[in-house]
Image (cartoon, rainbow, N blue to C red; front, side, top):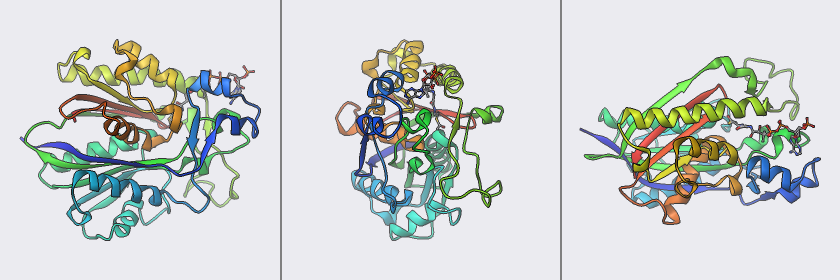
Length: 322
Ligand code: ACO
């Protein structure tokens, strides 16, 4: 039996940090409101000239080094993102070229905040099928370029970044299970109103903004993330006490706390980055994983549950031994 195993991780965040105090000067909000409602204290924001592939490239280089592999060894490149550099070519081909390689399949997956979980699940299938021996999987986003900085209900939530993992085959787990889901009936609760085939010609730069019915998203997110976690444990006949770490999507501290409570997991077993990164959409889970590994909390052999929820809605979980 072939399993996929994380061989290395990396993350990259833009240099500029926007604190809650900075936001207090931009919109009618307070540090206290943002911290108590969301858990966010600061977030990294890309410069005007920075692109998502810039962030991907740096995160990828770190992950490759960590895995001890060269770019030439990559035979599959998948990127989860909603904010690619261009409509086409897809961002994975741009990153592939910037890594100095070519030839292997390279494509992106758009599943909002669940993008990385979808991307890693896809890579897992390639590896299990024997079609990849060294996959580079990235979750990356410059979501702040979609932000209306006058809209206090959304501008305080988001940040930019990229997280990367190198995945290789192994005769023992590795990734144990992946569960993905989606339900388009919730589209109107969270979306960006302009796309290539819809109203693009009508919109001027900066005319559109993320539309979110925050409190409704909150309720569905809590319910779905709880269900997703329970589904993963049940499918593998694993008790919650066996979990070493929960690495959840970092949308809101209260959502994460509610999920942990429902699972009966103490917060000491949860990797939290929302305070420093905000909601970085598809980048949030791989960056949180990298943080937990690099600060020494997540150790080889430990049992990790990663999960995410995002616009669509989309959702998913990956249970794995690191
Ligand atoms: N500062 C001060 N007050 C604010 C701010 C702000 N930044 N934003 C909203 N408010 C006000 C509202 O106007 C409202 O005022 P009112 O009562 O006078 O009308 C009040 O605060 C409460 O607003 P709610 O929206 O009900 O606040 P809530 O407690 O639900 O918190 C939040 C809002 C943080 C957005 C929360 O609903 C949430 O986190 N939802 C989930 C969001 C999420 O996870 N989104 C991402 C999903 S992933 C993806 O795909 C991108």
